[in-house]
Amino acid sequence: MQVKLNVVVGAVAALLSGAAVSQDMVVKIGHVGPTSGQIAHLGKDNELGARLAIEDLNAKGLSIGGKKVKFELLAEDDAGDPKQGTAAAQKLVDAKVNGVVGHLNSGTSIPASKVYSDAGIPQISPSATNPKFTRNGYKTTFRVVADDVHLGGTLGKYSVAQLKGKSIAVIDDRTAYGQGVADEFEKGVKGAGGKVVGREFTNDKATDFTAILTSLKSKKPDVVFFGGMDAVAGPMLRQMKQLGIEAKFMGGDGICTGELPKLAAGTMGDGQVVCAEAGGVEGEAKKSMDDFRAKFKSKFNVDVQIYAPYVYDAVNVLAAAMVKAGSAEPAKYLPVLAKTAGYKGVTGTITFDEKGDIKNGALTLYTYKGGAREQIAVVR
Image (tube, rainbow, N blue to C red; front, top):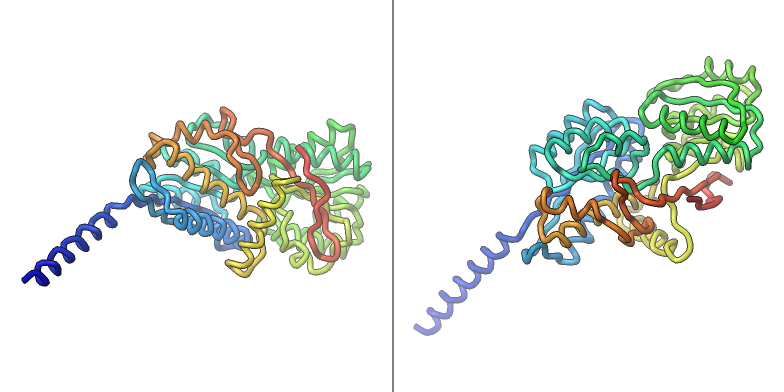
């Protein structure tokens, strides 16, 4: 009889234990990026950064407001298209996510930010650099990288002061990101006393640039800046080579990827390309970034493209705000998130200003040699 009683007691205890587990809090983090289309390699890079962050958070066994937490990732594809971006945002809102990391592109992040704002859900972009993203007055909008005013302006000054550009041509892909960074680059060139000899535009799906490059060739540019992504920059570099344009080629973080040499099919000269990534670490902080890259490669068997470390930090910043607030409810942890200061991430120290922008954001300048990306300097 005693044995039977023990069995019953044990069974009840097991049931109660299961009930306790089922009452653990589930926190849903949304992620949106272009995991299909021309820049799917960048979107997948972002998504893997989010997956690694979720896995690491769950391994820590965190509690929020006294309840053990299980983090879940809800990943959506926006294909880099603004309409698909807002549809993906609404899908995450309907799924009642607790926070969102994304989108990758400025052109999708900006319209999606209204959807999240209307729902009161915090959104951190790891890569949208157009200044407008944080200038719509939404309290839910944040980013962990420097914007195009800083990025484009710095590259513009660099083209004149360091590359000694005398005649500089500018091309953009007419997206919110591409046109925005090209506009800021042009301002930077003019502010440094440089001369822009031509401004052309294409689109983010184009593959033939013969007409615009032929038009620019007659102006004998020594620097060509392209505002857009690597999927377009690669073929553009190939066609510059075919037309005998030997100018330096510059661009923002959209072209500053490990894939660019492959996309350019071996036509890039050593030191020909100079680009900037909206972020960067130096000194002691460099070890954290190097460790992250090694862990990422070990886990997924691919190298980091650009933004995966920023996605990783953005997910962790959301979680840290929830823990500090003692709640995963957006309305309760949002004020704590907005006051994020001195957070030590793999991408450096994260502190948000009143607009939701990162304070004192760094840029890393790169070139390519022997088909590999090589750091020039970290600038602020």
